[in-house]
Length: 458
Image (cartoon, rainbow, N blue to C red; front, side):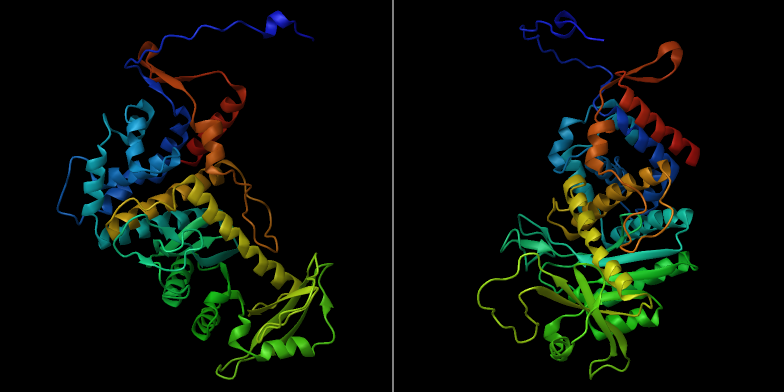
């Protein structure tokens, strides 16, 4: 039916008078879904145990400060000073179980009191939440990806150092090594490091802990892992083979001059698809004791290089192809190995989403333990956004070669704009607490779906 102009247009020239009053109005009605999630996880009670060893017992407990940081990031804020913009929001206060939020100075003092033991306990709790979800979903195989990510600091934060920093050259930074779960898009664990270390620094011990924690809790699950060339060394490869972890790793050409000669000597390449071809062999470097499967791949370049070629001493150079070597203990076809290894790019998306949505790249304090707690809170906020969606929607039926996430996750920023940032009012009609929002059908459908799923899962 066609509408008239009178039904569509209205005159609105007058600017309304602005008034500020104390009313039970919230700007974040949709965060009620996280209230249900936190209750289901018993987040407050479990976090409180992480600080039971601290003798200081302030009015605002340390566990409340960590919960506030998690909520702060879920709401889309990054700097601690931005708490002032929602400190009177009744929905946030109810979520915290407080009548008022702590001042920024109180939060800073609380973070300064946290120690290495506190960090370790929060880290263990974060792992436990992820493992609980994995036990519920019962994946037949899990893919653990390992890589580091630069977290730049603006000042001289304790434990930071000047290292490789592509975006902010010369800035001090941390360079933590992260373990992520490809199937759920979550952070499993973190190994914190200064910014001037190599990717593989402490990697072997950290990987071993991740594998042991996963195997002890998920004994029947097949573990997989994939790494870039920075993690390629004899110790890490041998560790994965000994722990029966199915792995792929990029092999740096500069380590073994034989690789270039083997590629140049190959006259027959097997076709994977229109872009990729391969050949493979069982081989071991001279200093190694065991042979492994090496898959040599080449990829067609869409725009062949023009002009004279700059020859490389170690890496083969051609106008039409790019070359890569993958070492693996997988027994699947070469095509499956290549697709699996190339799927590790999904981890970069996890880092990007966490930095954009949950302030993973923010370093707010000068003390090392405080910054580690902040980073762990960022990881947990990211993980909770995935956990909520996992509970609300069924997973895909089978694993795909590249091991993408088993759900079609929405970014937290999308959920924030569609559901969380909704105006609402608290009222008590006939003594019953009620949160009233605008009657938007899309918001109503999504919000009630999440609430129903979380209440059924409790």
